[in-house]
Length: 309
Image (cartoon, rainbow, N blue to C red; front, top):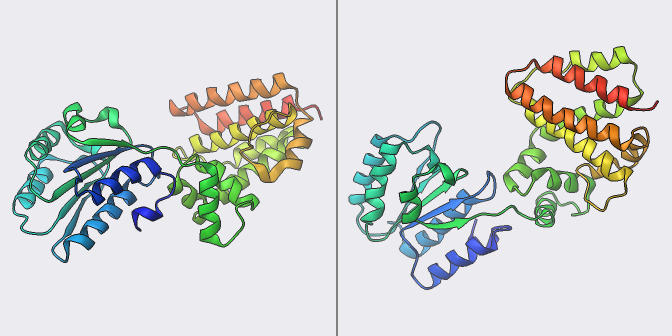
């Protein structure tokens, strides 16, 4: 992918394009922002343009993986960088907040004594966790959330659908400004899992109390996913409140307009607000190792009790 093809990051792209045109590209950049905003993609696009200019001797080295980045890895990096001959060399250090203090100090020496035609691109989602001295040695470019309309157009082009397609609009809303998250929803099972949760939520108000308890008993106890599942429940009730009060806000679940109107009529504003407050309490409880099914059972029964059926 070229810089021209990058979606929704006009400011970082413009700065980098100008530097490339003027041959003033810095030796170290820090790209910060949430996951899935295109930080790594932009770094690779710059490397690609440098390779096109620098010829076959240009190279890209990626320091990724999981866990901490230790001093041995940075020592190896410094050794390789010092031996770089002609051509352009690009180092991409992913999730640079993983640098241990020792590794960070070792990298700092390299950034303070740059090798000609060697460029470093660091990415991070937690800039506050990085050594301030490293941040100060880099040109810091912040990546912003991508507008929903841009994500809709990107998905539409990718899937050959209309940007107004209900599913595309739903995914763009759920992506919360991240192309990576949008792709995960579209290509993975996240959207199906979300729709399964919403199916249960739509049935709760009119179901019997034993049936509602059955929903909680059959709910998978996955501590890695429960936070995201509670977010889905929160967004559903936020939509109910929005529809009930005819508030001019985009819905998290635009494909369920009729269902939202019918169910919103069963609740008072006070009941919806109490449910939303309880969802926040449940998130704190499960984050503190609370029992998932107990919390969900309590929440679903509260949702049932709040509906006037």
